Amino acid sequence: MEKKDHPFKNSQAMPLSLRAFFAVMTFVFKVLDKVSRPLAGRLALRLFMIPPKHRMPAREVATSESADVRFYTIHDKEIAVRSWGEGPVILLSHGWGGRSTQLFSFVQPLVDAGYRVVGCNLPAHGESSGKNTNMLEASLILSEVVKKEVKMGEGLKAIIGHSFGSGTALLTVHRYQIKPEKLVLISCFADIHWVTRTFGDVFEMSDQVVSAMEQTAYKQLDNAYGKAWHWDDLSPTLNIQKVSQETLLIHDKEDHEVPYEHATQLHDAALNSELLSTTGYGHRKILMNQKVVDATVGFVSQ
Image (cartoon, rainbow, N blue to C red; front, side):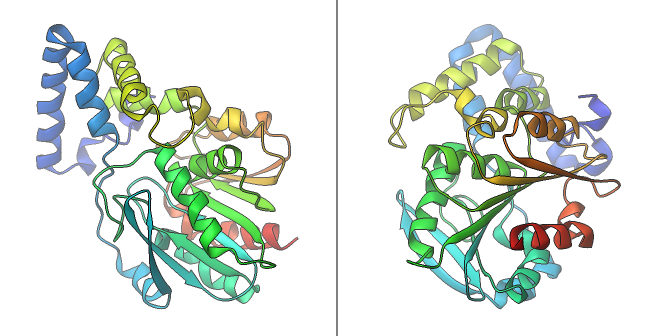
């Protein structure tokens, strides 16, 4: 990824305080790379698992306030769950640093089509508790929300994910044998190692420090979520080969956060997928594109 396209390297969009933070941490990692790579790995993993905090924009407020809200205690975290409508369940899986109402454009059309839409805020997101999280915890949370929210005879019609939430949706389906009828994966990354390398680029980490971060994760999270794991297990390209559900991949050709080639890699690897491409909506505005919303409702309703 070119620096000009890197989501954290666009200085015009970055406040001075954030630029200063990245500059200081870049210096710290350069020093630790020479002094103690294990320490660098621990610090890197801590930063890697802390999502950014964003205030809910005005466009999401009405959808948020119209929801039924519950809190569940899952894996020692208080998880906020919202739902709208009645019928077969469609689960929303939000992106890193986001919240379920980021997919607000899908809610009313899906409710009007006869579905109950359920969205949870992952740990350290929105009103849910916690200061950090990761794909392993997020997939466990989603699987438990499904068990609590999908009633007998209701069925899980689909999971709709965005970005990190798309990768987490795939991991949930494979790792916990959750069985939605369909999957919609919007702006999904293909390879977990691409994610860790891209994160490393933010702070100009060496490959050795990124590797130390990955090794630290094995030590800290080895038995944390009930099943053994490997970094490769988190890669959507591998997981999409293991799920049989009909899958709609949606990606913008001008996405500068997760480049479009990730979608083509996933489409090539999938057992049963369609690919819908857009142009000009990037990584986030794609969620408010009417063509995307209509295609999603049509796909899950087929």
